[in-house]
Length: 436
Image (cartoon, rainbow, N blue to C red):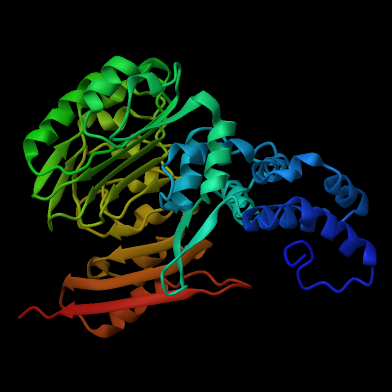
């Protein structure tokens, strides 16, 4: 009743009577009590409560969780099933998961034409969180983190509803365990080549997540590059590609040129665990032919990225990471995430490139504003139109000879938009180097 009628005082013994009947069916299962209780909170009709109390499926914990799953909206169910792709205890990030759902086509826009897919996906996420299908990860001190996990029993439920479309391959994998026609695969082993070449239907694969472990030399790196060169040629339906490497030495990784064969690729994420202070990811010139790509994430943020010059051809790009900087970003009017923009004297890096990027949201860092010469140049960025930007970080750093009045004028031209409600944060970092 704590979850079914939180903070509510109802002088009606019927709710308590029915609630006790439902609670007796759940056999003291905490996760069942939470999920069922929160579904009852959403629908307080006595007839619904009575029908629930008479439903024998609640007699088993997994049956109660199955009943709660059936109460979810139809559009949200495949999003929950997709979570079975990740191992138990895996730390999920909200933005990452929503962008993957969008890449897979699970998120549908509503009647509001101005609403972005990300807004709808976040509502899906929040509903799963509300009904405890996703849970906030807590530290040993009881504080919340920005990561989310799935309860083991709910993960088992996700596996059941997902069926043979989803599969995880670990260190103890067996060929007989891999279902025919699997479409979404998580591989946590160093035998990627053997598994992909012999046991996966690459032509129908929509998700490939590779988590390589214990890499101590660059030779293994080159082997993986060769494996990808072949795989990319055949994974023509792939929509999500995630590669996580565990390096203990400095090095680089070259993405094969054959990546352009994956015409439907929408989400690309590359991450290496911190084993050194320097690492380079080399993106081929063919990367600019992935016209459907929506998200390119490279982690950690200090990873050096070598990329083709014509990245601005990717007109459907919605999210890029901090480490990816390229010219003529102003052409990408669908961009929502641009954590870092550096002003340069070279063509294509002018402050006015931000003019038409009015879908930007979250944090926007603008560096090297010392190059900007006047308030008029600053106004051309049209920051007043960036309603979704919630944190603005301005760095006045440059080699120039002028007084602070010009800095004040430029700053005034970059004033963020005013909002009628909600918090707004402005971070100003000013660093002026005097030239003798």
